[in-house]
Image 1: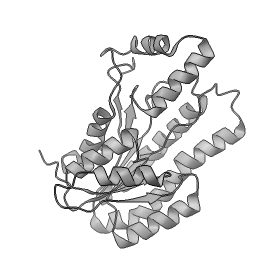
Image 2: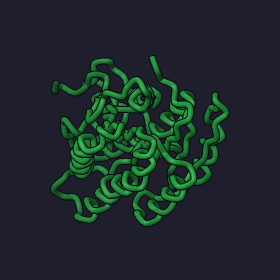
Image 3: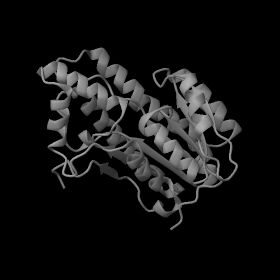
Image 4: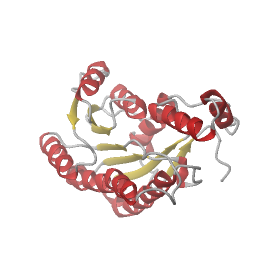
Length: 261
């Protein structure tokens, strides 16, 4: 099975922790040169230093906020001009929880900017290099809420659905150029995001975080939370040459939790 990514350059957003960091490790293991993008320089520096280099490839990082569209275009544009990017992992932390009907308008605008507008800016900046290479992979890390909205995540449910529709449209526009666009939908995964959800649900319900976690796990057939590398493995597969005919898909990695087909 052709999984080798030697000679490819990957940009991994949110790469300093959680699923982003685990994905960077998988892509580097397959031979890709990896550039991490996040806000915290110290965490980025530490992560880059820990990435494997089986092909003696060079890794790096960019410190930028996904909400700052102008800075994002400028920093990523400079990166792509120096070293074209073949793989984009579009991964951004989710919006705060709460019902959709009580969410402030600003919360929707902020989430739209960080997820849809930032994604569009990244794609437009990186697309010329992918077209020149005749090869590209765009993988958006979103949520199972694309198929089944999650209670008390109103803003997130809304924005994640918008990203999925945007990605499906792109997949049809770019497939002929050798560029695939797919979404990975993580289920309950042991990350800082999950810890925040546990705290929020505990505060809202008056239950302990342990009881909240037990209630969540009761809905998961495999009866446990995912580990970040389990999500990263699916992302890395979609980036590999062997997955060239997988395009426009939203793939749940949720332990069988969703009840829809």
